[in-house]
Amino acid sequence: MQPHKLKQNHRIIGASILVTVSFILNKTLGYTWLTIMVMAASTLIAGIPIFVNAVRAIRYWIVGIDALVTIAVIGAWFIGEYWEAAAVTYLFMIGNYLESRTIERTKSAIQALLKLAPDTATVRRSGKEVTINPEEVLPGELVIVKPGEKISIDGTIVEGSAYINQSAITGESLSVHKAASDTVYSGTIIESGYLLIRADKVGEDTTFAKILELVEEAQDKKARTQKFLEKFSRYYTPLVILLAVVLFAVTRDIVMALTLLVIACPGALVISAPVSIVAGIGNGARQGVLFKGGEMLEKFSSVKMVAFDKTGTLTRGKPEVTRILTYGMPKEELLKIVAVGEAYSEHPLARAILSYADKELGRFDEKPTEVSYIPGQGISFIFEDKLVLVGNRKLLASRNIQLDVCESDLAEEELLGQTTVIIGHEQRVLGMISIADPVRKEAKQVIQRLKSSGIQRVVMLTGDNPRAAKAISDQLGIDETYSELLPQDKVRILKELQNKYGSVAMVGDGVNDAPALAAADLGIAIGGTGSDIAMETGDVVLLSGNVSGLAYGLDLSRATVRNMKQNISFAILVAILLLGGVLVKSVNLSYGMLIHEVSVLLVVLNAIRLRGFNTSLEEIK
Image 1 (cartoon, rainbow, N blue to C red):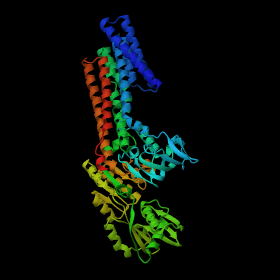
Image 2 (image 1 turned 180 degrees about the horizontal axis):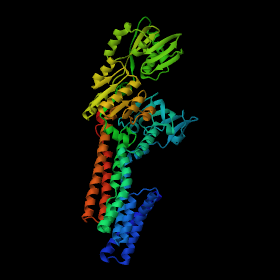
Image 3 (image 1 turned 90 degrees about the vertical axis):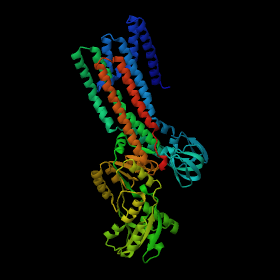
Image 4 (image 1 turned 30 degrees about the vertical axis):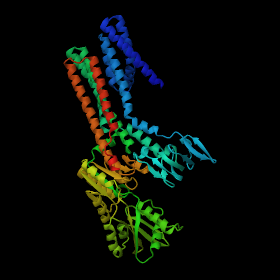
């Protein structure tokens, strides 16, 4: 047990005994010197932390709840209401204690994540297995993980295979099979199998460490409603003191004025937003939906329209070459030219071509020169002293290369939903490569869920050609599709959609969509394990690496905002009823404090309900 908790517990026990003795003495002996001494001791023990907090706040020109209670208690003691003073301080102390304990439960998600942090790591050093602290593992070292153990680093499997529980990272409950050359992440658990892993990222650089950091930061970032309430309370409490003075001046009833100070404490109102926000963010983190603060929760709940990127978002982002057509040269030669130029590209289509070339041709050493990446169009490079263009229609049109020779083949492939890469060589088309990127199996169901949840419009923004874009759009039931877009075009269209529909969320993989994610009212990044870029660019990150968390995130954000509004409404209603009770003299000082503290606890308990929120996530995985 920690020292400060021990001290707090002793204070609560001591004050509980004294206030009980005070009550008995007051009922049996009345206000004797013994009764008053015991009440004074109870007031001091329970009230000292309140007085100290009030003085500290006033030093920073903040008149808070503690100041209201302090003034009321001093006033009660001054007019001889010793029992009221003892009861108010005791109830306030107990209320604060229960409130802090209950609020800790709303933060259980981060505590649960912390428990998943690996404690040890077994590394192979000088031919021996050595167990060390995970922070002592060096990049490049070989880490051994056995069944039931947590993986302590992000790394690549060198040997073995295993079923891994990745729920700590992605929220997915089903285990995933991993084998040699696959990537694994810190915080995940091997359920069966054995792995020898090369450490790629260690310590604070691991995905798990970054998720922890983001969740902690998110819980400290305040929602707009929360900021407003805090600002409101800074002006509200001095106003309450002024009203109490006016009330005394008019009625000459000091008890009524002091009771007003106590019942007007805005405790329930001030915490009504943060407890809901913290509980909502914690729930999302457990399910693989990472909100970067309360403001993002509020924005998500008010989204009217959702725009999707295509490649890597609605599709799996792992395209495969399906067909190669050439015009006057062997397929192998065309494939080699393209592979040489794409060797430095990170685009998913380039990776598909390189993977296919590696299988068909093996490795080669030729290098291109003057490689230039043209956003939204493709690349150009010099190979064997000739300019080569690899990209879409816009790229070849910009160099006045006619597509007559391949136009009918292009139309045929695009109608099938294929993405085509055209290869041009100076003034003519050399060939084309068709690439298919399978649609994510959960995409159609997620879009249907969004529409049934009240999203007015679902749109796709893609740099792909119109025919291929339409094929995907028809398959998924998307309302509007915008094709052949450059990054700046996506930003322009998002602004038009914002003017037309209101709040717009953009969903992308965070790699090529950074401008669009930033331009939208809410940027939602498809994170996937190990995607640092997605974690940095999105306001909300779907850690599962697919769109299945999107509908859940929307439902959770709405539930959180609804919970917050319930709390605020309840806090205001209690304050109004108490004020009425004071004015008709049916609420005294101690009853006012009791009701106030009960209302605070009810607000916190209502927020805790969000911990159990869990709707339909499994249905759409």
